[in-house]
Length: 259
Image 1 (cartoon, rainbow, N blue to C red):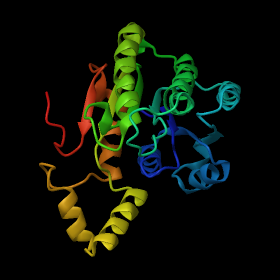
Image 2 (image 1 turned 135 degrees about the vertical axis):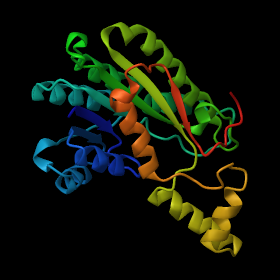
Image 3 (image 1 turned 60 degrees about the vertical axis):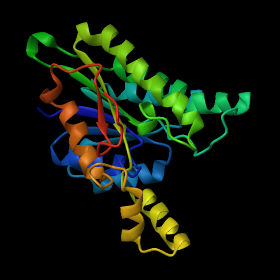
């Protein structure tokens, strides 16, 4: 079944490969991210580019989110799926950030994305009698389930998405709207690969040596690839998840050692 799917963070290291996969599968996409030029460039590269639309939005700005809602409404489109990627939090080991920092973090990575998700859910029109369900996939970080050093704020904010997803799953399930989450470990996006290359250079290592060292505590001895994330998200948007909601999938190579 071809669907109309909203993807936030569409131009990022995970978003762009995901959009490419969904477009090749024949879905129509609404792409959202901060940079209008990058959004349009991505649209032009996708299969069936005339099927897709771009709407710029800044998750940290309430007015921008309001404008996004107006533009989405003007399209008159019923969404079948949403892939929500809350903006990442900066690496920081400060366990007592200032009140202003907390407000900024919550706005950009939780309050803003949640407001956008509400707009998207209100644009969904599931039809259970016709077997048509709506799917939401929230992509978070491994700090949703595993405390990490140097990510103090993320250790607090990311688990909030799992709790919110459970709440939404209970609330929206009767309408045929599914809410599932994916918690990502290390993923070899272009940016993360560049970070490993810099670490390798600083340590006098090859990229392969550094990668082997960093993944030595991952049971699969590897980081993931954006295409692997895309496969998981694609499945959760499909009929594969017709009896799944409120579920969190760990895509971390086995790094998280808990049940």
